[in-house]
Amino acid sequence: MNHIQPKKLTTAILTALLAVFSINAAQATNQTEDTVVYIDPVFYQHHERLLHPYYNYWFSQGPTVESVAVDALSAQTGAIKLCEAGQLANKVITLSPTIFYNPQIRRYYSTIKAHVYAGDGTLLGEYQGNGEQAGNMSVDVGLQGHMKAAYVAAMADLMQYIKLPQDKQANSNVQLPCQIVGAQTKPSYYR
Image (cartoon, rainbow, N blue to C red):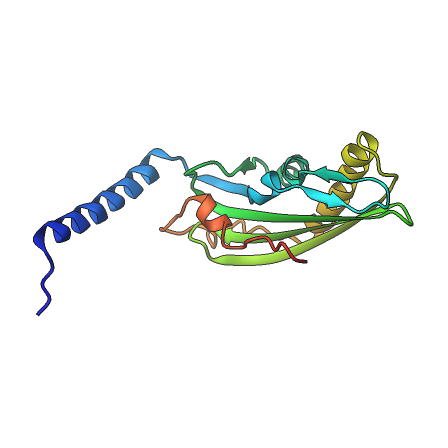
């Protein structure tokens, strides 16, 4: 007969109790936001390459989409914050951007996918916005101006469809940190 050693059992129980108390303490100290935006860290850490026959341009999508998304969502719903460590929210909006440049016709094509979750991780809706922007590719104008304009167009298209619940549907008794909720939809590296 296999017996569990009392020291290991005591350690396991104490670890479980400590985890429960730390979650309750985190929920008590963190103020719950109404809506936060989560952009996966992969869009900040791994750079995207735009196609061009002669040049290689690599850029980080996260900072560009972050500013565009916060402006667009704030205009519709009011105060929007970005997801921070341990932050609790009633609604979490995850954004996954993609962009493609066609050098033959000098056009940027962008897509922003959004998943809206309740604070407990329940999926409330999936949305997608697409945008296009004509322009040449260069470091200053192309990557900072035309690419941002393509994301603005995609976000404007997304805002026509996205529905954020204003009632108590998104509020729940259980709330998870926004990183846990937002990480449910991992970005695909192979499109």
